[in-house]
Amino acid sequence: MSGDNGGEGATEATAGAAARLQKLFEGHRLTPTQRRIAHCMVRRAADAPFLSSVELAELAGVSQPSVTRFAVALGFDGYPALRRHLRDVAPDRAAPAPDSLNEYQQAVQEEIGNLQELSAALADPAPIEEAARLFAASPVLPVLGLRAAMGQAAGFAYFASKVHPDVRLLDEGGSMLADRIDGAVRAGATVLLCFALPRHPREVIEALAYARAAGLTVVTVADSAFAPVARHTDLMLPAAVGTGLAFDTVCAPMLLGRVLLEAMCDALPDAQASLEAFDARAAARGLFEE
Image 1 (cartoon, rainbow, N blue to C red):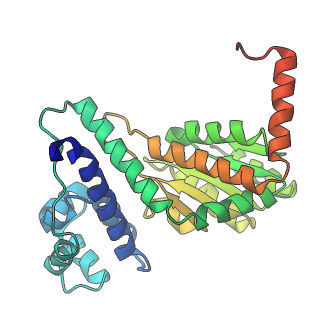
Image 2 (image 1 turned 45 degrees about the vertical axis):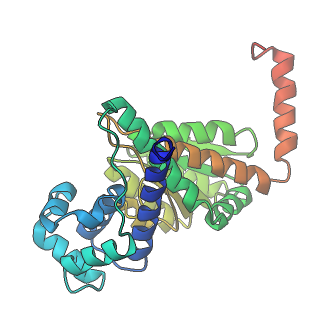
């Protein structure tokens, strides 16, 4: 019977390892290179206690001395001390995916692990509820997502517009982006929601810096708490992406967006009435096939 639960146990172990790493890194001022190493370790949470400094450097795309400096920045004498600590707090290595799984199945298993990690993070709903209050209180809600994040931003904006009075999708870069942020601020916006996924466009980072300078509170759904957008974000909501296929898979960020929508509906007093009014209009227009 134990074999039937091996996959579930492995994903739970991976989620737990990632949460422990996130907690270890919190509160430290890390350089961009060090954030890259931290991000890599979170994505490879189950393997992290067993990686050599050379292996970790290769995976993160940095130099071996950078890994050593990263460990020292976390308060350890060096990387061996960091690795011993990780082994002490997580002595049992998560079981690897069975060899019988093909690459597509492995990608699915990775996404299941990402969703398990998100579920563990949502045990504390306070950040979600805080974001929802900010969205509900803002007369205008700009939603930013460029390139790989366009779909997540558009999906959120589509549903949010059914309950929020003024949702503005910002899905095109260029010189007009700052103008549209300015327009949202003039119309009363107090917060901006950003979906940021790898590879992170420089325009997104610049737009978030501009938005904060304009007085907006920035809430960001990103693939990691150590993503480049973190330094221009007031409230970071991480949700890992899958990297097993040619293009990243983003089930966890999508689900987190829906969770934010649910919380925003709870925070908007007229949300239910707005949904019922839309349903009535849709029925009158024959909008959907039943």
